[in-house]
Image 1 (cartoon, helix red, strand yellow):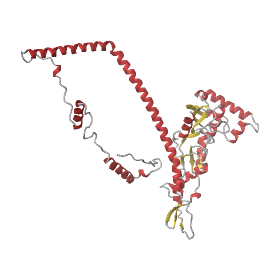
Image 2 (cartoon, helix red, strand yellow):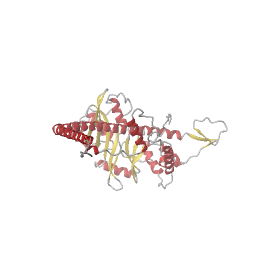
Image 3 (spheres, helix red, strand yellow):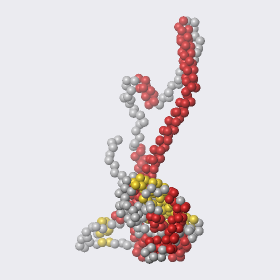
Image 4 (cartoon, one colour):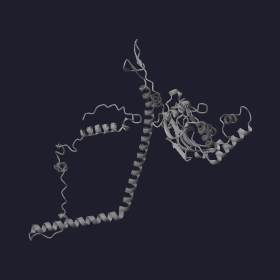
Length: 454
């Protein structure tokens, strides 16, 4: 079969047509039809090989014809008496006995060699095989990790492409009963048909947003948003998702008339993160009460400057830092106090740093800044965990990369936002009061920046 250049335009993370049973059956039918035409014989019918070797050619013909291997002839290993009293029969029996005796002598020599050197040779062989197995396992693990990173990067790129495709799909108009792009230049007397459906408009706008529902219950939803989406948009998206459900029974309002939900935690436009949203001020107050009682845990991954060691996060170091911060906040009443203003402006308790649990997950050498460390931190008693973590790492002299005020720019990440991501939220359900944990993977962007800086 001649090889042809094939362009693959599949976007499996975006194209959901395969979820349709009818489409799936059609695709499987096409695959089976193609496979039916791709069944060449296992071996060629005519043998033009082994022309100079009769033994190999006969063996090839035997395998091709499907005949089994003839049994071994064991009669030559038996010691039998002469079949007659002739000299030739006695000579043949004598030669056979001599060959069997030589065979037994060789076996004795091999057994002696095995007894003297076999154990050590076996150990050496096992050691070599273990080394080979370890090398293969390490290579396999590395390839598996590379595959995971490739899949994550592919999903991120396809999701970005999906937003663009959704925008382009909405740029069609009906002019004179013909579908044209919205960039079509209208002519005099053109008749433009405009059909506005509130629900369709809401769903169309939702498709253009990179938000994903991670958890939902009556009056509460947790969304995962991509970088570039601000607080107002994600609050609108939560309300739109509720209206777009098949179980929604109310009157569908206009797209811009939706009453946005309320974000419980901070929403940073340049950061991919989880956002907890509620549909009423009463539920908002209930969630804030859980936050103030330390029942809500936010987990953030961040790329920090320097070679961070877990000893930095030791309990004594954390307690000392929290105490120093508390003393500065309480004792320094100056209007220009950096600590005092920061804690007062952001409505944070002075000992907030003592409620941070952090660990280092990886350290990568960097040609620009020496080292980059990937830190994972869990934070209590605040709805602004990323703000607290930025200040916390700055106080430890390991500021988060991308903070223009405190860090040097990276070669592969200049003026592109702070390198941190909201990866987990743990909170009590407002419906059942049971603990809910919502999490997602570390964004490929953070891992790719570390890899490129190496």
